[in-house]
Length: 302
Image 1 (cartoon, one colour):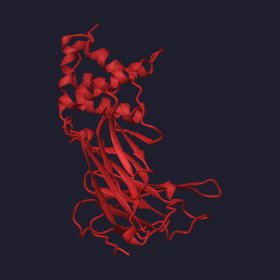
Image 2 (cartoon, helix red, strand yellow):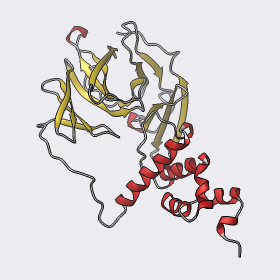
Image 3 (cartoon, rainbow, N blue to C red):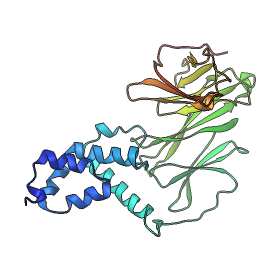
Image 4 (cartoon, helix red, strand yellow):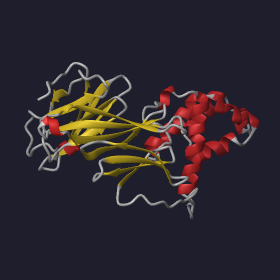
């Protein structure tokens, strides 16, 4: 009977692409001939996709990193890191790598994925601080005058930046809310810093509900039952808020469309992609999605 190592490479590659990550590493460790499969990018792309979409496990991957565009070495490292996490998580006694306690008071906290950094928000002082969880030290702090509310969790990029989405209410704007993006740059760990970008007024007053916010490394915005508002954040004082009419707003539903059922993100090709999900009174699910060019829709500031 022929040994597994004598099978054609294309057959072995197909076999490897069907294995979960733990079994794949066991296969590659069998012998030198099988270990040669690790030089195929398609093997690792299939393995990482299986982790994310079949095993439904998060990946230690920045939000602006595309799996299909990662080089071979990065794919292999990503698979090994995730395999260690999975084995620890699914063991009989999962072990934390380390623990540390430090006092930040009664403040909202946000962990920066993929780092040892923690952001804390003090609404009473209108300030945001960055802490190094390994040492318990505050490594930077910024004041955000008239900070109203953090509305979007951290978005992390591969170049060492994390963005927090917020709203501010500036007194010179008649109490109208503006969107704000607080950017934490941490690529140089010896020089961690905050930068804040504030949009023109969005034309609404608190409370914001019902609304759902979205954020990535280029755009912050929110959805309502009638419109989608967004802003491409940059220091240009001439930048404007943009608006897209909610394409589902004019559709006839048995009940008003809740924006909580609308998700939004910006894809690598720069298109705004929205997905709507709702359930009718009769129990039927409705799912729809659209992709729009976000550069061609403007709304004048109020």
